[in-house]
Length: 336
Image 1 (cartoon, rainbow, N blue to C red):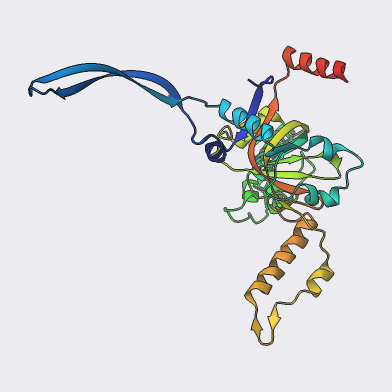
Image 2 (cartoon, one colour):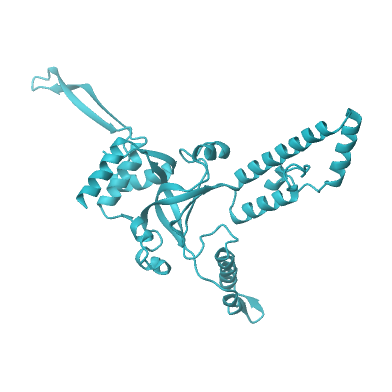
């Protein structure tokens, strides 16, 4: 049994069951033992029919593992050498972050514990939309206090909104959530807030992202947490109201997806996809991929940024702090 209690943020149960099934030759669900009575028919020499009763026992192993399934799988993977904890490697100042792929290639199962942040462009849009609504409300209250009568107040309100009228974006974009408002109370305008949301959804695809920064901002390990998986079933606002936006320690377990590459615009100049008068399909795909790598290198695409890499997550959790954890850490310090 694990010495730690975990609070799971995310668990891809389908992937966990797939790996556990390969290692354990099936994933048990529950355990029960049944007895059944077997009636045997025997024919003697005299053709006299006789019967005998035997007892047979059938055991069904289908243990309910639930949340312990991942912890069990994690222990097996680590004990059999499939899973490596690379937290200390990433934190060490002497580690050459540009050559990590030599020691830990893509598809390697790893565990990383370190400081990280959550990010979701949808939350940015909702928070700024609420800010715009609150600012507009505050401005309206100020106007109502400063005006002597209802007629003057209504006229001033119409005049002010006419000056600040801005075309609202298409309804299918997150920035459409931010409506025009009176900037008097905030010192900001709606277009500025929309611009923040545009950049957020352009750099990060809408959805929950976990970014670990074990050595400050020298390297970022990214994981896109797919919706519909276990534990990640809450509204973004509730999720962030629980965990906040500041860095805190997370543990991420999964396989290395892909490493980013250092790309410059000159690399594109040297990459041609034309063969005479025809287009080479494979070279064209390579050219476009190289172009996207350049965008990712510049931080303008939802891709790992050099020298970081992405993780295909199995689970993300944080360790629950309590007397037991303090005791374990003291024992570790005493051994050192």
